Length: 449
Image 1: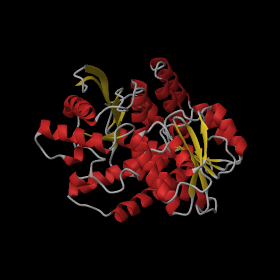
Image 2: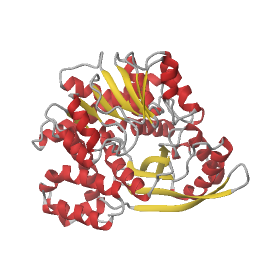
Image 3: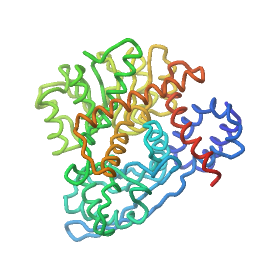
Image 4: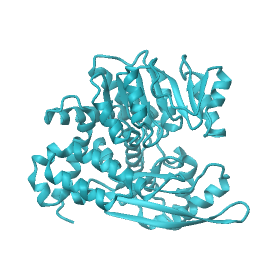
């Protein structure tokens, strides 16, 4: 490996050893881009990599709110504005008890290259809080969101930083956040947040866009292999907006999700999640997002408690779409042994580095990385920003067609970058190289700061 790349990785390990998720993603990206760094000695002279792995700025703030019983609570809020070289900072807000500075930084770092791959002018950022929206009333969530935005609004804007939703932050939360922003600023800057309701500037198909984009990317992989999506059986983790989008678009294109996992176990439905079952998924998760067993009870299919569906053999594609580090070495070995050819990451960093390296080393498998596969969500967020700035409203069909085109380009960029460096059809390395290239060029052209 390039000595400069290795020194930067060691420096990150030393400085951020207590932030494992961040260290993991930095190692994965920098290892992939080492061949490009070899060809650009000017990067070392400008210390480009050490600059690139540190956020431009990161805010931590307290969020104080009152529950329905009058009890006051204090949470921690974060916003990491990681890299603005190619556009305003762009990335979601995550409300989950496990949110830490490490997770926010790794997501912001990944977002920088994901946004670069879309071809849209968006920098990388991420934010959130250790607040848990589960079990909270609408009024409690509104008060929390208002308090959160009261601290955040000073640092965001349509040309500065444009947050969106992520885990725990859906249309309801975005609405409360935007209402408080408008209240504090006294202006209609609907381009300051994406994932908004359609009635006040949101884009059609945004909730399902990440899942749709993942299926479009899968189609490109299949086409590269002389294959088609018709009849494919898919196993996923998660059944939130992303998982639901995968289910819906797969069904439209003649494939079907036959396995999906939730916090309580996994479902096996040989007939697939199609037709009215798609509507029931929405109903089920609205009532209780922590349990998928009601699906098995309703449709008389298999439910395996306390397990994930990694290692099942009667599928054609694995698509981890829930959360980071969902697939570790133990699960990766089961996946490889199943003989399945396609492993398509969808969630942010769902596979640990050792497990990902292991799967990439399997000659019978094709592995696609999340930063490319799940870029459809932020791509449609970018399209929402365009509609806001131009006071336009595109139809669902128009947005869907633009999304499909973006995913096609992302796949081709990854293919071209990998081939340029003699790496063959290595989609993981190709996505890192392609995303890194644009950010690196922008940073070099803008001088040292």
